[in-house]
Length: 332
Image: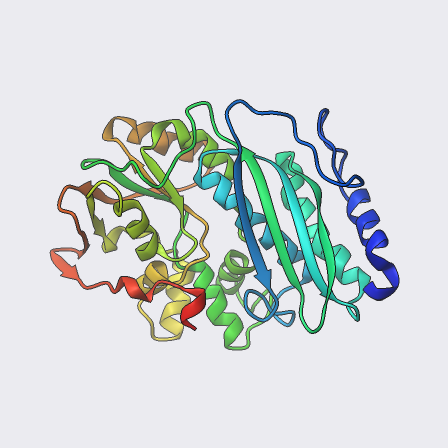
């Protein structure tokens, strides 16, 4: 069935039946506006949009993967604040010729990402589109007991820690752009394609380490850009060890295939959705232990300084890193 036959009410009904009922005190889909109970700690609110042929391509990703990624991108913003996600609003502009099964799979991907965390879609909007699908997700969360973890707050002497692996998502993008389709032709292919098409936000890790960090952000635009975000406040700089960057074997293998240094992908590739943290030395062990308990690698890649600039170190050599190469939607 095409979306134009399903209609807006049919789409709303489909979304409504795909997820559990809102928690007590919440009013979700079906009224003029959503209702959320008051929260004395305040709300965390973030919003991201995925546009067909800019953020995803149907010949690369399944609708369920696109929906799941839309959810995870937003969950990552709440994770970076050390918060707990609670509810979401989703709006979709969809061409009338689109199959209703595609739209259902899209929302199935979102609800599968949201359900384990207790996040409920409370409303949004559906409109027609002339030629491409646009999916917009706004997410609401609550800060942890110690308040939100902000980008500002890093201090000289803090260690620079990062979760997971870097550059893997861009390695997956490289495979897709060179004709490799999901799930790839090898274990390495599948590993990096998963990183790009099915990322997983570090939501629970962010909540767990929130009380011990001075500052935190997620690696959405590449490590170089995110380090800049953490050092632009308070006149702090950083010494970052390129030789310590957590670039996995699969990413190294794909980079070698295309004759590229994998640290380039770690610095500028983006969409890794790992957490980058400024951690006081007295709390490094607690953060590393949380990672071990959760089965998430956390790597110490440097230190914040009072130098007022960032140095990128490879052994005894300082390398030049061009921060202007960070991804920018409007520089294309």
